[in-house]
Length: 386
Image (spheres, rainbow, N blue to C red):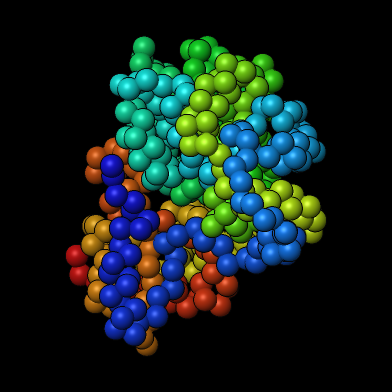
């Protein structure tokens, strides 16, 4: 199994904290936005006296309510099209296990969420990358680039929309191009849409589930982790109108028995969160994004693409090896007793040697903290020697 590029530097961070260094965590997508009170109250005020298994597909009441949530957003699904999972991670494992056999291949635009490598390894599947670039804002690579990579072993294309780690939001036309591609080659299109609520600058999120002519090909992955700032709940879902696919995914769901009970209670209650919650959250993230991107672009030698969604960006730094730089920040650098922790971006690629000078930054901290973090990063780059 590959190491997590997000978490592998934790031991160095722990040692820095032991030395009394304060760390601004830009390395992990852990929102500081408050979890909706309704979700927390549903757990605090529950009178359960036996913490029992749920159905392997999850609570029927939660799936009904979740289907209504999707329907309000133009995605026509029923509760039978949904299996609740232990986080979006498990949903991705269910998807890969259901559509591939060991030795099969999946195509993923890179950079991509690093754990896709781990999920593929666990499933005995080979990741075949198609490169998107910072210069193009990490837009969808040309369809011809995908077609060159399709073989008899190819079973699916995986996308994250909006993207982690890039923050790129696929346009309706790009989703349509992918729909035509999977239909032409009889592939699955697996879309990780856990950041669906986070679309900025008046842009709209376009779900793969809105492409009704490829119902047999589409699999949507979702989660409450980022939407409601409930990362620790570990509740996600796999959604598809393909009945055979969902019957297969159910075998995986039965093998792990059921998703966690209290977390489902919290997730179901969270669906009552008013739209104003997201209005405020999006306004906050846009302000943070603009502050971060503006600050990074003022640092000599730094290049960054402006994200359209989620709460990440990829920045190219004037260093040869971002892994070494990120470790140095924790081991050997501080500014007034403070330093920053970033995620080296090479781990978000599967192509050898790509992204060596890039980092992923999560703008999940308040604006004033982000300003200070950027100032620390600038000071560090000014003295760092490769």
